[in-house]
Length: 129
Length: 494
Image 1: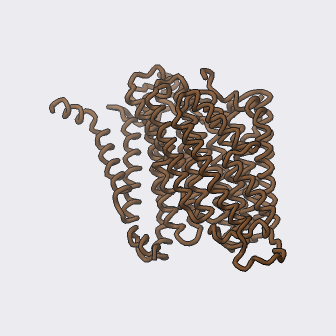
Image 2: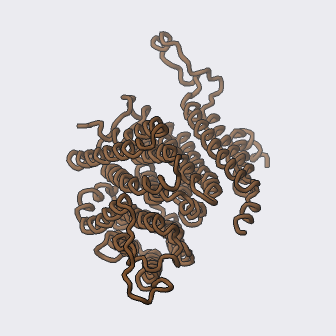
């Protein structure tokens, strides 16, 4: 048990991401309300964003903006600078996630206007009539 | 020698989308020339790329001169050049038909439809060109988001189908992105060739296997591989006719291409994961199961387009199974089947579009006497059906032949049985339609008065005839296609 706890504490960022991901996954698959499904998708995407960001962290690392002249003279100390690439990638992933949410909300609006409900069961009932 | 020609293949539809969205909303008559000209130029450029690859071999291109592995690299090899030609010509042919059907189905909203439509095509071109794992994710989402929009434009339950596709499609993309994240943490790079170079030196088999698993499952969801196929039949049959003729032939096939890229360009053929007999057996077994179940489900459908969607699910099983046979015959069959299945599906969906344009629906019982009413459409449909069944000399026969040879060579007899079973079911499915449409007459049809021929409009008929001829041409050209293109795409070890 102790060994397990040390493992969890040492890599707590990954455990948080796994828990968030499972919550999102459950909402997407298990919930019957369409908005809750969409919220689940957003939680899932946030979990992935956190995974990437936490992979770029360095203890005691500074912001990855370097003075040109200092860098030319002394070089860049990779150990003292946070890796900026995961952040940039996640900026793109956030854009993607926002676009998907936007499209999904627009589609939900159409469903609401057509059926007057966002419960999947009620919609399917109305469709089968 | 490198040229920029492949950039035009991708950028012309994107530019066309911009122009359609600007001028199409002012004057709807601008949509037709803008769409067709941008796609036709893109298709011509794709031929130029293919010719250059055939003469000089594959090349890579760095966008904005940021050198890889830091910049995004585009890779044009035999496989991606072949896919460029396939996508651009299938898109061009499908567009003739969808211009006609969209003008009727979505009057006043054509510019919205074709803006999304052209961005989708540009995204598909980008997917086959990119040599960067993260860039691939972004392009995957570009194609998916445009498809969500196109599907939601349909009538009836289309918004609900589109929403289910959004949830499943995004889940697939998220899984793929997770896999990329694991690979990035392991190797510190996103360039496919660079990952392939570094990966053998990485310790951490479990993490590598997790990355591979996530990427594979993500792509399998996106391509509607059997237990994960739930979204596809509704999405493609509820979509507007004009969106179905583009998405159905291309989306699943391009995703199969991506799976081949992940298997052989990122993880390479020597990777223990791909050589693992347990993984191979599992996937080929599931694929065999997928083919059989999807074929049986297709039998139960009463609507022509819905039946076709289940056949697509079965065909995905063919291609995934073939790639995981892990021998040259199987992979040749898979790549050949990507081409053939795109053409066959296009042929059948164009026929479906033409029929529903004329008779207003696709219920099987409404198709009585169609051979007299629409002889040319139905002749093309018959050729497409024969190709789907696998009757020589149509192209469907040859890829199936390679897949069966590969199955026998790998000793995967379940896969061979599934292929033969699916061919038989396809024969039953299509001969049932031929029986209804050819032999059964309308209720009052026992007199011999000639039925008035009412063909589909020329815009829908011409691409259909061209595709039907292409089915035969590709069938006869299988030998050269394999010798000059597909042979170069197989990994050396096979």
